[in-house]
Length: 390
Image (cartoon, rainbow, N blue to C red; front, side):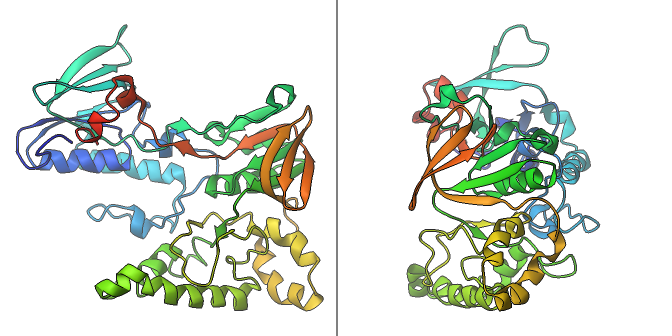
């Protein structure tokens, strides 16, 4: 950022973060003749994919969209594990000679714009006893949006005798063994944690959502096009008039075909094989307001109870989608409501049907992250730096 970033050659630019965006930013700026340095708070290249990784985690975007166009990885699985993806990023850095630009284990604590138009950056490396200040012409903030966990507090939390864990601290599914697990949230990490708990010895697993979700698998087999490629090519890039773009004509049409396909193939139109957890504002008019949850391994475990209560012909017709996890893991219970209070050994939810009490000794908060950059706020630059560091 800073006036003229990427246009006037010869600028000194600091890139904060060595994840995917930081690497390609550094490569591009260096290619345009700038002096570039990359600082990364972690011990290795990879950013969030390195620092927030947990066992068995996979990318939900396919290799066709994830890999950079100038460094493809055709031999990779369709959806890489995070271990493979961080290895890919390291290979990318090595291939384009970016390692020489790196300063790992170096944390930025403040970025302040100075009168000359440049920036004073306060940072501390692994061998620094105290933070020091460097001056740069511009700063590119590539540290991502997954650094400040959103950790809600609940009434009665001080009485809860179990463990409260934010998903950012989750690493190994053995954590769940023998425990009564409650997961608040219904995003992709929540689904991964729910599946891991149900298949790694938890005594019970309950997931909770306030507004529902839309679940669609990231792929339907390694030999078939992945979901993101289908979305990107199924008329999405066809020509549209300005009017059609403005009123959302494409989504108005395709949503109807998509939901009808879900209904005929899986018995429910809310999502693919999704018999529970309907998104509160899911309509037949448009789909663009919904973020699709593509980590769907636990969906069969969530729907099994609903299917057992359905007429026999529906169970017979639609249970084929559950075959990969038949007899595997626990049924996952779903509460549609918000946390009302915590008790010593339970979480009480407010639902449309009234209060519901769920026994628990492990409460997992898959509640996302705050979109904040503490090093900008620390210098009092959250407003001013918005135009000068980004």
